[in-house]
Image (cartoon, helix red, strand yellow):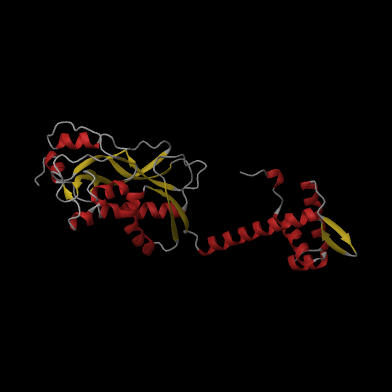
Length: 301
């Protein structure tokens, strides 16, 4: 936020910058297409608004005070920023940058392959990615949108469902009997749900805990135990036989993945383009439900 009281008129800032650059009122007036009287009026008004002397008349030349010299450096930066922003808007009215908060595993394995296709369809939009593991407040943040796992429970957000999640229990090849159960800190109920789906008794928990899928995957690959992992995350490891199913096939996880954005704030053009494209792509590439889910719904496998 900024104080309008200390936000000078643009013509006054242009006049001050021209005086600093050219050294005389006549040269500044010619550069800006104004009279010397208009330049003088703008500068007197600027001094009155700021309450600071900006100029000294010395041997028929206007010289900036030391404080004004420092000030005009920042003014010139601001004018350049405004000019660049205006040029970018004129050249690319529907484009710009989209700042997106992602979950690391989903961002790398599900979203990243799709971003190349989005870039081909919308070269005017640049997507910037940063990792956030938990919901945050959009107000005051630099993010336009985020990827959320769970339910539609992000306060103040609108939701676009991207995909459900299928999880599968895996180990390294030739596991021992009753391998330790590796756990993700944010999903303490996954192993009991998986055991119930397999008709097994509630498990004895006590294996290693992890805060991200990536490190838990590496632990499973190195034979430290069994892990419940999203299928999209380990497709290559399953295909290459470096991870093998512990028992049964994939089961539906409790949560889903969503694109979320602040519902009460104006939506910028890059977000509108990204959301529309992602909705269409997610619909085209949605996986079929696992056989266990189809059977529960009364469908044939």
